[in-house]
Amino acid sequence: MAVSTNTSLLISVTLMILLAASMQLGKNSLASSELMTIVGGFLGSVFFVALLTAIGNFEKLFFGYGFQTKLFPEVVIALVASMFVSSLVHRVSASTCMVFSLVALYYINRVSQSLYSVQATQTAIKKKK
Figure 1 (tube, rainbow, N blue to C red):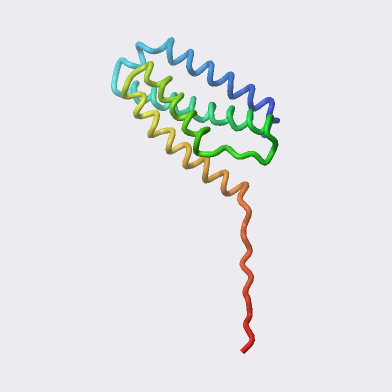
Figure 2: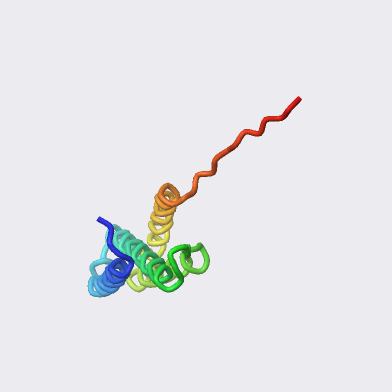
C-alpha cells in the first residue's frame, strides 16, 4: 500500500531512529559472535535504505516531483552514515553493511528503472533508392 511523501518521510525517519537506538542498546550482543556481527551489518543496510528513502522524500517535498536522487552526494552520504552507525557496533558490521547496502541499492535501482524509466521507441527510417 502506497503512502504519501510526508508519511513516508515520517516513517523512514522513525525507522532510522529506532534502528540506530536498538543497535546501540544491543551493541554487546551484536558484537558477541561472528553471525551477530553480520546481523549488525544487515541492520545497518536497513538503516541505509531508510535513510535513502528519507533523503529522497525530503528532496521530493522541497525540490519538486521531478527531482531525482543521484549517486553523489545522496547515495554516498547515506552509505557513509549507515557504515558509521554500523561501525559503532563492530568493524566487521561496517564492512558487511557496505556489502548488504550495495546489494540493496542494486535492487532499488532495478525496481526504479522498471517503474519510472521512459521506454525509447525506435523508428525505422526508410531510404529511397
